[in-house]
Structures are given as structure tokens and as C-alpha cells.
Amino acid sequence: MDSAITQLLDSGAMADLGWPQAQARQNTKRFLQRWLKQQEGMTTTVSTVSYVELKELASSASHKKVIEELIATDSSKFTHLESTPTHSRIVDTRDVVLGYRYRVPKNLLGQLVESTSRVPHRQVQNTVRGSFINRHYAVWRDYAMVPFLSAEYRQDLPASLQWLEANRGLFTYLSNGLRMISPMNYARYAGTKPVLEKLDLEPLCGVWYGAAINQETRGASGTHQDWGDFGLNCVIPWGEYQGGGLVLWQLGLVVELRPGDAFFFMGSLIAHNVKEMEDVRNSIDLFCHGNVLTWKDKEDKKEKGRKW
Image 1: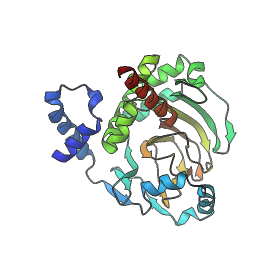
Image 2 (image 1 turned 135 degrees about the vertical axis):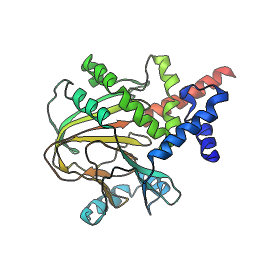
Image 3 (image 1 turned 120 degrees about the horizontal axis):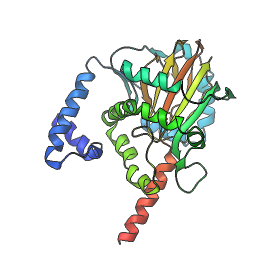
């Protein structure tokens, strides 16, 4: 327990809670005890493919060929991880978390479903990733020098702001989960907030910079990797669908995600797709783009240069 508390404090994952230094260790202990209680009955799947190997493959010249060979195989023979009420995690042999699943409280899921039904209607898009309605409410930096609010967020105002406000409790709940699942990942995301504030911006979805909102998804999705993202995404599906397991190709796993399951995983490193399903599925995908983090790092260097 003591070493885990020290790790949380040293990682910086607890820093944004604003606790007085004299109370930080005791408060972190209580926070950790609550999390360990929630983890009772947790199952662990150990992947033979490591985080390091995933990173090396993602940057290798042979990546495309390897993934093409993988998706030509029969995913029905992969290990199937059924949805359960208890926590479930996927780790490599060094205990690096590659995936983590638990259920969202019903009241938070209900608020997500209701609020998403009120966002402005858009047309179904047919893309390589599938056929569905897609929009992004995010702070990102695509093709720009500095971060900015996504066009879809600005176009949907004030409904987009109302959606964020309605789901603030959900985003806090999930952010606190990430704080425990991967303290270093959480601290990396959270470290950008004070730099964004200089632009009158802030992360929109708890510690994540934004959300992809996917509605009216039918059938299977195309296999892809979220190349622009960094760290652990968080996906939550809902609807009256059957099937629709999430295939993690390099890991040889199919993760069942029932309505209200939150699944944290490395979407930028793991090729994935949703299997064939019946009826309609909706989902959100919380993410942080890596180019916002590289911008933050450059701003930090400038600031240090000014101080010297």
C-alpha cells in the first residue's frame, strides 16, 4: 500500500486535486482504498505481445503488411473476453496496462444517452471505418500551430456545450478511473491544462481533450488505428445491439462491450474494429491527440528558456 501511494504521488496523478501537502498522503490512501474495493473480483488477461513490441511495430516499415496478414486471419478463433460486472484488465508481462474494462453507473449512462439524443442531427457518413453519424467535440491541433476548438463543437453551440455540461459527472468518473489505471498517462494528459489555459482553452471531457460521438452504427466497422491519439482512449457503447465485440488484432483478443461498459485501450497502437452486430449501436470515444502534447512540450521549453 505504501509503495502504491508513493507511486501515485510521485507520478503527479494526484496533483490536480489541490490537496494541502500535509493531507496529500492520507487523502491518496483513502482514494486508493476505494479503488481497490471497486477492483474486488477483477480478472486479468496477460498478453504475450508487449507494449514495447506494439510501439516498435507501429513505427516499423513492415507495419502495414503485418496488420494486413493479421486481419486476414479468423478472429472467431481469438480469445473472447466476456463482459462481466467486475473489473477486467489486459496487461503485458511487465504489467503495463493495454486494456481495462468496467461498468459505468446507470445514472451516468442514462445521462449520456439522454443528452446525446439532443445534439443536432447530422447525416450518416459512409467511411472506411463504417457507416454512422460522427462528430468531434474537442480541443485539438490538426494542421495548426496552436490548439483550437473543433469546428463541429463550434457549429453545434450551444448544444455542444450543454452536452459537455450534462456529462461532466461521467467525465470526472472516468478520469478518476484513468488516474488509478495509468497514473503516468493521467499526469501526462493533465499537465497540458495550465498551458491550454493561456489560450482560454481547457480539456473538454475531464482529463481527455475531446470526444468522438458515434451514432446509429450498423454492421461491422473497418479495421483501423487511431494514429493521432496518445495513450489510453476510453470507449463507452450503448443501444439495443447484439454482438459488436471489439477485436484487438495484435493481441488476438475480442473484448465484449455491453451497453455501459467503459473500455480503456491504446487505440493508437492496437489495430481494432467492431465485429458484425444486429440493430443499432452508439458510442463515445474519449481521446487526446498527440500533437497537442508535442505543442505543450515546446511551450514548456520556451518558458524554461525565458527563465534562463
